[in-house]
Length: 212
Image (cartoon, rainbow, N blue to C red; front, side, top):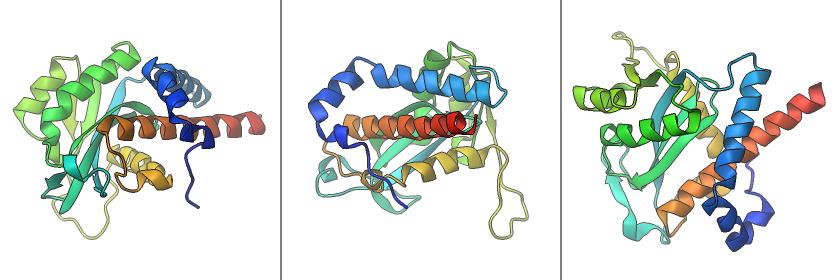
């Protein structure tokens, strides 16, 4: 069933203050480290997965919308990096017509800031092919690895590593407010995705506590 964002987020000024002061970023980092340790992993990842998701615009967000020709959608684009377990590392929002390859430097920088520069490799799809994004990632100490489709593709193909970030996008769409871009500001859309990621990690942490 779809989920709503927490009721307290409706009191946005209070939630906004917590977002501005970095409380949610720190909470996301602490939860990610805890869940990784519980899964037998190091607290900080050595690999990340990068991708983008286009959200269709609404009347409230239409003025800043761009057109994504590949997805045939007008709206905003969420650029996101997760670890290999699907936990959030970094994200930001642009108009939908932004080139994914041009966002690599910003994502890579944010990933290294969130992990203490522990990430060595980032898996991406063929939309990030080229020397420019590879160079942008290398400038932040990350090797970009493009995961390509099999040459003889028949039907749905589960790509190694790549499916993890797609699952994270699917998790986000279970929150009704994140199905489309309903927000006036791009920063609000990014903040709501951060809150949703924290909610999802809290749920995983609570399940681990119940199980123990």
